[in-house]
Amino acid sequence: MRYILSILLLCGLCDGAWAQPAEKKPEPPPPPEFGVASKFRTQPARIKPTLYNLPALSLPHPFSPVAALRQLYPGAQYQIPHPKLPADTLQLAEWSCPACPVKWVNGWIPGQKLRFPLTDDNQTQWHDTLAFTDDSGSQNLFISFATTPNMEGEDFLPSGRYNCAYMGLAWFRLVGAEWQLQAFSPVVGCFGAFQTLPPLQLMRLAPNRYACMLLNANGGPGQPYVADLYLIAAEKRQFRVVLQSAGVSCINDSRITYTPTIEPGTDAGVSGIPQLRVRVQGHCSRTLPVEGGTRLLQEVQPHLVHEGACRFTVVRTYLYTKNQYQLTHTATQIDGE
Image (cartoon, rainbow, N blue to C red; front, side, top):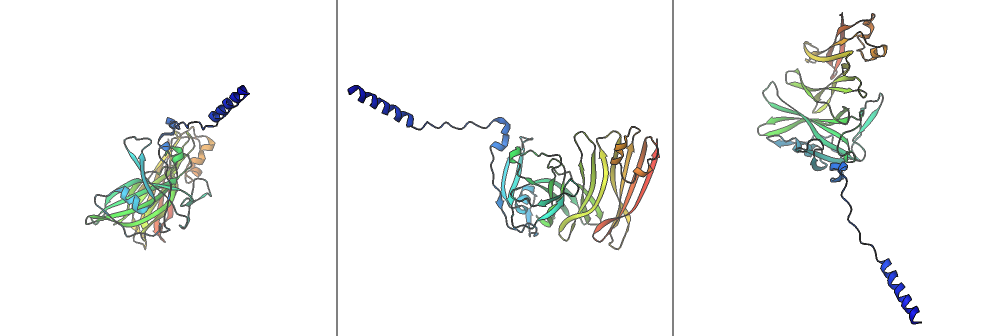
């Protein structure tokens, strides 16, 4: 009996030992390939549906694009180390706006419509700045902003060849010691590839009238990049596309190459704004395959009746009427080699 009690007592002690919870080990650090995404977990701030209403906004001199971002896109503001430039940082605004009116813009796929703002999570960052002095001597800034889906899962690295970025534009003018907001649109279109906006160029359209120009290009891996030209100007304190010229540039192809230039004209219509000419000059080699003709400008294709290299010039003339530039004339010149 004594032995039986001893055995039962020993079993009870063993059961008690096994019943004790195991000590929890600390979680291992995330592997290096997770990068900055492993260190930053953010939640979008819900903002009021006033995003499209131009605020009365003044910022102190010298101008800070980060301050403009915080005021124009009032979401959760934070900064992270730049994934490609360790010495730099990304300033981000993360927001959602379920009650905001939805605007639909074109994507890369023909007929595709993309909604802005995104349903759940928008990440916006400052992208580009154009500084200029207008004809009256005032200092001005055009500021572009890029909005994309939340990119934490991609380590804040842009991805997707046919993923464009929503471009917003703001115009500030220096008045005294303050930069006063003149125009603002949170979205004017979805441009670029790999969720990255193309660079902006400044265009003077008329005295004290300026616009942003961009080439919106894309193409397959290792394939030619064909671009459309856009002019975006401020109208009634908002930005909108006033000119679109399709297929004006082709690069990354030794057999077909052409590039555009914009030439302000002298003739003006009833609007008082001079016409514009989009001049496209290029080269076509002898080795151009039949299917390659689809990458040629539509004005050039009918003139290629013989096999052989050629140089060509296409001039499209636009007149400003009904709040946008309308194509009024096209001239094509083909020179053999």
